[in-house]
Length: 201
Image (cartoon, rainbow, N blue to C red; front, top):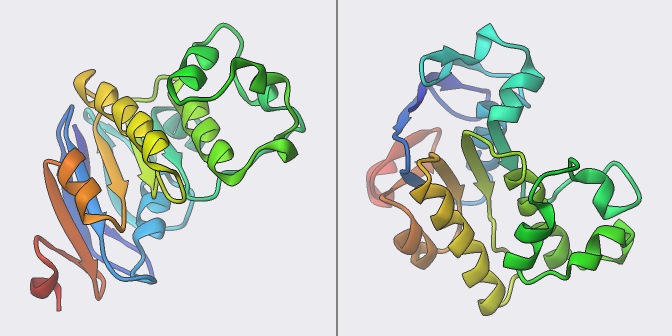
């Protein structure tokens, strides 16, 4: 269980949300509402106040790198710190299998990151996060700019994570995607959550 209590930054809050094992919660709202910052705050990448716990373990009680290994954020624009794709994947983990499931060739591991298209980077970043078997998955626009076939592959992997009991929070601008994946949708407008957009005004 991921429990977020009184989470707030300069852009939003306080916000409260509980995400059960195997539950997907979609977060929608207008551009600039703070949806991406919300995910970054949960992952302890941006300053925030409030408490976040995972299965009773407080984020504040563990080093940030340990927390981020458990609570994985896949941002809309992924970061790459080495020239070769394979250098970003831990050895002995199911990176090639995940890449194949996302429609990417296994030889991509030998490619330069600069060779990847934006869609390939996005899918590779998802595979990179999943191969570390996170306890929570935070996804920021996971299928932005992907074609229909690639979107289906990404959503299939997300469903696999849900079936394995992983709590997922997904920021998306597509109501249809929220309907396909999420058990509930929250709208972030004017710094607070509502269960429908008009109620957040």
